[in-house]
Image (cartoon, rainbow, N blue to C red; front, side, top):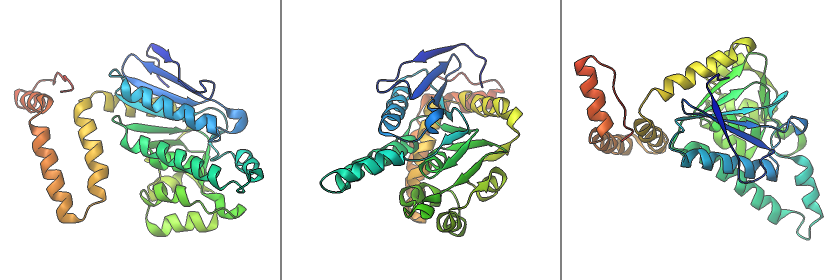
Length: 277
C-alpha cells in the first residue's frame, strides 16, 4: 500500500498472526497474516491484534492505523473449531465462550477507543466477527469484488456481537436484513448502506488507501484524538446532553496549542506547523 520506508514492530503475542509495519509518515499497517485459516479470530489472532493495536496506541510516531488481511478472506470471524472443541469441558463450554466473547468485545472497543483513526483495508470476504471488525473501524475501503455477511443465523448462532457494531453503522432495516438472512452483500451495496465508505476497483486499492491515510496523517494528531473520542461519546447521548458535551470539548480544544496554530495559520494564509499539543 505504502512505498514509504517502514520499520517492523514485533507484536508481543503470537507475532505470526499479525504483522505490524510502521511507515516513516506515521501509518501503522496491521496485517492479519493467517490466510490458510481465513484470518479467523482465534485466541492467538485476537491476542495478536490486541497487542498490535496497543503497541500502535503507545507509539507517538503513529498517526493512523490501517487494518488489512492477507489472502482471499479479510477475516472469517471466530474460529469455529476452537469454539466446538470447548464443548468437551465440564460446563459444555460456557466459561470458555464467556471468556472468548469478552476478549472479542474488548478488541472491538479497543478499535473504537483507539487514539488514532483506524481504516479497514478490505480486499477479501468479511463475515461474522470479520464484518464486525470492519464496522468497528472508523473508516473502511473495500475492493469492489469483495462481499460481506453476518451469516451466523445459517448455523444456528445469531451474530449478536457483530450486531452491535453493524447496527451502529447502518440503518435498522439494513442491519436486520443482513442479520436475519445471513446473505452475502457485495461491496457496492455495503457502501450504499454505510458499512464501508466506498468500493474501489481492486487495482486502485493501494492508491486509495494511501491517499486516505495521507489526508489523515497531515492533520494534528491531538485534534483527531479529541474529535474521534467526542464523535463516539456524543452519539450515545440525547440531543441536549450531546450539545452540552460537545461544547465543552470545543472549549477544551480551543485551549490547545494546535488550535491556536491552526487558526493563526489560516488567518495568515500559511501551512500550519502541528506540534500535536
